[in-house]
Length: 472
Image (cartoon, rainbow, N blue to C red; front, side, top):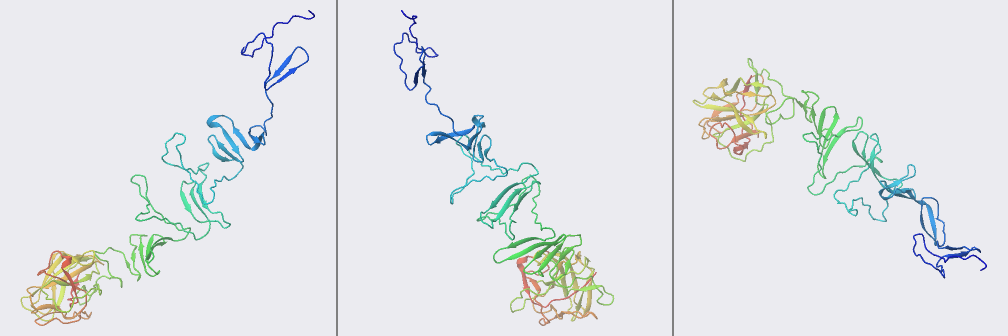
């Protein structure tokens, strides 16, 4: 032989399969067989080679049959699993970021097409249970503001903000342009509530003017309106249709009081109904020599409906309201009798008034004998006639045994002259006469002075009124 003897050819891969000997033929499929011209033949089965598109971290895509990469589509974090994130343009997605704008001070927008809506909601796609949905608007530090801004896209856009500021105050403002309202609206019978959620803690609604601006509460509907106004320190004003129609509640001191639209001021509480507006009440003055007395002509006037024609017998108690000009205990009651009536007695009573101004509870009673003429004074009372300045009381009387027109007790004159005490009461067998003032009331069905007046038994009348002098 002209050369060395070679052993049979064995063919196998790195894991010893297949392991074939001897080999007569080698077939190469989808690869290259290269003869180097010597005793070695190389088989290349790696297929065709290619180069990744773009730069490092860029995600590959089919670019006209070749691999392409885009600098705006990259793997930002290749940690794997929940830590992997990608970046599309300037927005990063994934990991714990959600979506994040990657340019300095850049804005992030979510768009819906046309009239489509944007929903922020939870889901159950990852296996969780969807109940509440919470959307957080977060500021970085405690000194920063968290703001939810509502606006439009026009050149002169409107803007309103809901802000949690650095003081942890929640602010709703609509002040980008002037004179815009903030409306709270509910439907049906719903109500707007202001509530403190901490147990046993006060709820405070504060209405604040800006700087020296006034604080106002405007109560209105389509046809009615009233203002509650604070334009002076510690003074609440209730204002009607005009500035002159204002009640002022002055709480700047214990003696502040209530000022009425006619500029009169009341500084003490009134029993039953407050005094009517007009000149301020004054303490008693000397009317007749030797007396410190007050006429009962200081009474509420007008506005009471009189009865229809026809006289009512004075067998029912009859009287009229009186506003006390003084705080104290009444010492005596004086009347003037023009015509005596033997064995007859005027039974009189002083009543407190209820919240509607009608007589209610008997405070004190007195009897005056009518068997002589002139001024008759009674200093003896059953009960204590203690009265309060500015409070409303009722003087009610009945003549004992007056079951017919005979010997009625009636008013002869409704005036007092300060030069002397004029006769104002008579006992006659004829009908009553004198000037009538529609401020009286009859307690129907009673034959004596009741301890408590039943409101349903009260009948208003314009009968003539008796007058008394009240001594202190």
